[in-house]
Image (cartoon, rainbow, N blue to C red):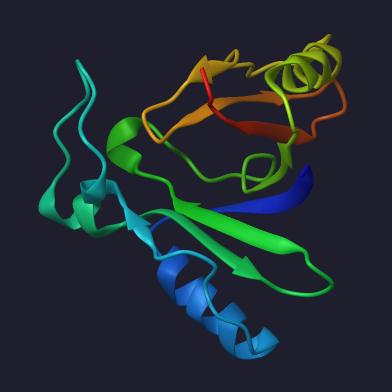
Length: 145
């Protein structure tokens, strides 16, 4: 089933922020926190420091009316820089790759910062773009191929 969630980026304090949000909304994480050190390093990937390996790669928290917020820590060593425009992303989870491609093509047209859609090691067909109005979109489809 399709869903839309909001993705939040932080510079090293995702876990503290999400523990705060969990207390505010009285909810619990939907899945265990995934840390950067939990994922295998891809070919050519930089070596992360011990501290970076403990940073949050992914967390999910239901808030109100079925809406879910998700978050990650950005890593300065990977060239990440937190700024207005990349701190909040609308995450679309369509039911099919075809629908993801249709939405991605439409929203990335005339925009920037487009990654393309790719198969990712966590089992998703994934990509991001900044649309022509400066809104950041993420696409995430469970990869069945």
